[in-house]
Image (tube, rainbow, N blue to C red):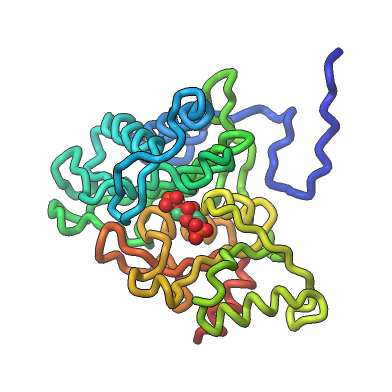
Length: 341
Ligand code: FBP
């Protein structure tokens, strides 16, 4: 007996009707990447994400759960899959002849796969974001951004947010998706296991403007500054409060999953600098978490800030620098920036 799935009556205009002609990532890149070498690098990244998706799926069977004795540059205990995912990225992307440098969350030093050369690519990436969720089988992801070397000097390797060529993330959830932007729009691809290829299923994703969900780790409330305290308490007051609407709260402890939800159904994500993490400059990393996500959310019509300036304008001075991260529906970001000014 074959089960007919009911026609989805979702409010989300982002999803491609099932009966429309399918476009693969390869076809999409041929039309949109501009440079063949960049299309090739994104194919390498997609292939790494395909491999990591499989590794995540069988992690319990393969004994890749739990923790290792290894510590990453941030003093965090590495999960076996943090290390494996990083190796997959290096192996897959080093095949690209135009790639010069890799900046990875899991590796202290910048990895030079080719000598520094003007115009060569720099790939900043978090191979497995939200890895604390692996053992409890919640969605995790990979985040990446590609930029170009501004000169033949290795000194110029740190990306400038306004010059990113593209950024994206993969989410390893109920399905595996790859979300990508070159800055003008955001497109989502779903991994089709029957062909092992990514297929365009979410064209031109836009952050819904009406936010009715906020995502923040409330257990850190005692450390927040006044602006965040009052923003969250206003949201919690619901329809009778100054926001005159009810807000729901979500926190998955996986930035990729929280940002993906915001791209699909709106809301705001906050991991602000606070009294406890201020010495470190915040929690999340600028180059391979905050900046790529800021480029995606801005291309989707949303906003992203560190509270003072657009996140995309935060100047990188070290590979693993941290920053305050507030991103989502434009209206919420403008409200929070106004409160900080
Ligand atoms: P990594 O797992 O890549 O270190 O990412 C950091 C992260 O897990 C984000 O994905 C998430 O938003 C945040 O930390 C969760 O922080 P907390 O443990 O404070 O809830």
